[in-house]
Length: 374
Image (tube, rainbow, N blue to C red; front, side, top):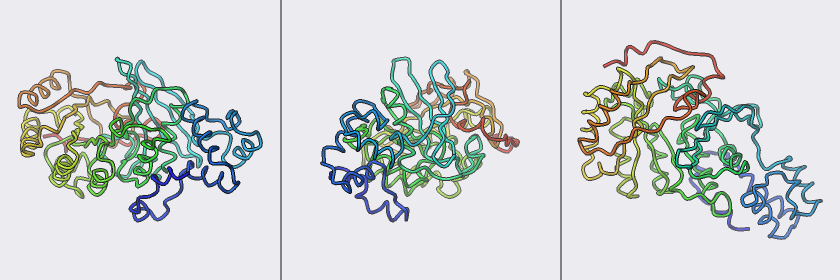
């Protein structure tokens, strides 16, 4: 069936990664073709997975029993390749630890907003090698990037659990735009025959990988972009986010300006509030200047202020800004005409907040953060 060609038709993927593996959905297509099964068999399998929410091949009753047995022998008992190991629930968030086929582990978070909206934060890598100062995931280094199947299986798990997939964010473990399979995963999530998610319901977060931001602009212009800013001062940002030394703040913002000009879409700026580090009136003024320099495009930037949750295992130790400081910072930006929100906090008690994933499964690595104070 030709509709899967959309997930592999981009020649850039092969250039970017020499081993551009078929997804399991493409392997299913090949498996059925090799056995000369009628074309509607794939439709039946996908209907079972994505409409009936049945992941076990043995329970796909529209298929002949012999074919179900062949599918189990080739692909395993279930279409789902990862295995849930541990669940940490809280009032509005549920964190899942998944084991991958090779024994590596990643985490994903289900969040339920007060209005009933369900959002899912998924991982793109096992660990991360960028070493952001406040991030527990970065402290363990990069073990490997996830395949497109491993990325989307996190969403598939919740789908098969009959959750409403209202939105998906690539804000879990790893830097999404350092993994070439992220683009292939976006194809799967938006494929009308698979997850059929609107690109506008997907958010990709990045610390500023310029080449892949440009590819998102070209290939997925409707996907939401979030840029992890965290300081308007380049020298300080280099200490918080070392990649700033490779992709400088000024250059990233110019790239985001181009993204806005091309797509007419908002760009979100994530700003974690760290007590005495980046939460001063001077920081607010510098952030206002930085956005005002964008000219007419400044109106397309939206700042999300994020309450910091102390991250076990992060390389440096910080404190959360108090509510009065956050409120002052918020009002300073808003009074200057900046679009700004204080983001709702999820999962502090289960280590499911920004930068905390994988923290409780690794040794602690802490150093003094005093050199960041301004």
